[in-house]
Structures are given as structure tokens and as C-alpha cells.
Length: 215
Image (tube, rainbow, N blue to C red; front, side, top):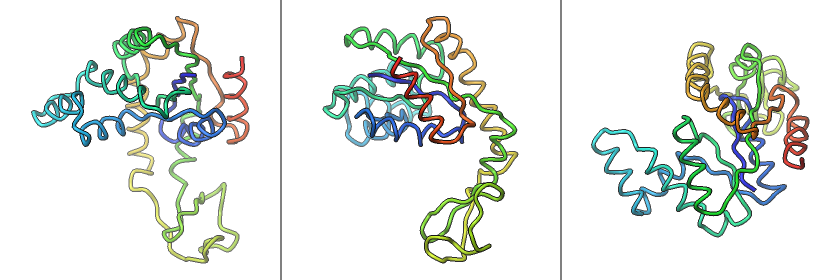
């Protein structure tokens, strides 16, 4: 089974991808992780990517597709995989279609996690974690039982991501929509795009995704 997950930062793609991995034996593939691994392993495509980056050029779609092609040949991808962060353009989507066809593979589902932007900003910018154990909290939705004290380890030190502020996160949202705006209609026109409510509770989102995959 081959799945593409779309959704802006903070929509919960990582959480849902982990659930799909466990329930269906798939592997989540991040283009960034694959690129770094290919460069480190000094594969043919990795060398090409490094040469492009060293020269200050963008890594071409051909190289990215080549890295994906190499990665999905590995044993852990035999049951299928989840693409996260790719494709970002129609040209990449078309190239991905060609590559999958060459491998005798089919794209099973393209799932967009729909969100309410204003509510998503509140969700992301209100989150913080225990600096000691990493337990997650939220200013309004998930406070510690005792204010200022971690429920898990009792630490009184907490931290927030530097980019979890309305200005920075707003820019990240705009960048996401700018990147994916033309790609989603591409898959909609092909009849493969499905949408789930990304603002629902985690278990409910997972149930919606399961329903799409079972259809």
C-alpha cells in the first residue's frame, strides 16, 4: 500500500503516520531524511544531491525521484510506504506517477488532513513540553494537574519551540499552502484525493483515515 499524507505543520501528520506504520506495516518516508541518508551513504543519487547542494543549486526533481526509487527497493518497504513532504509541485507529482508505474506500483490513497487555520495556530502556539522528560502540554487544552509541575516527572522546567509563535507559524502555513495549492487539485482531478478532519481528536482522525484506506 502506498499513501501520501498532506497537511500543514501541526496538523498531526507525524502522529497519524506512526499509527499507520504500526497498524499496516508501512514505512514513513520523509524526503529530507532520505536525502540526508543518501548523501551520507554516498549513493549515486546521494553524490548528485551533494554536488547540487555544494554548488548552491536546488536538488532537482530527477534526483529526489531517484532517491525515492532507491529507498523503496529496501526490504522494509516491501509492504508499502507513506510519503510525507512529497510531492510539492505538479511536476513532482507527475514524475512520481511515472516512477511508480515503472516499478509496477500504484498509489493507493492521497489523504489531506483538513484544518481550521485559526484553531491550528492556537493549537500549535499553545503547546509546550517538560524540559526534563518531554511530556507535552498546552496552555488551555492540556495543563499539568499542578500548575508549573510536570505530571510525569515532577520537573518545574518547561520549554517551547522557538518557531511556535503566531508570526513564524503563520509564515509556515502560508508556505505550505503556496507549495501544495496546485498539487491537491492534481490528485482531486485523478480521483485519488480524500479528506479527513485534521482538527478532530487523534483517535477520530485515525478512524477516518482507516475508513479511507479500507474503502
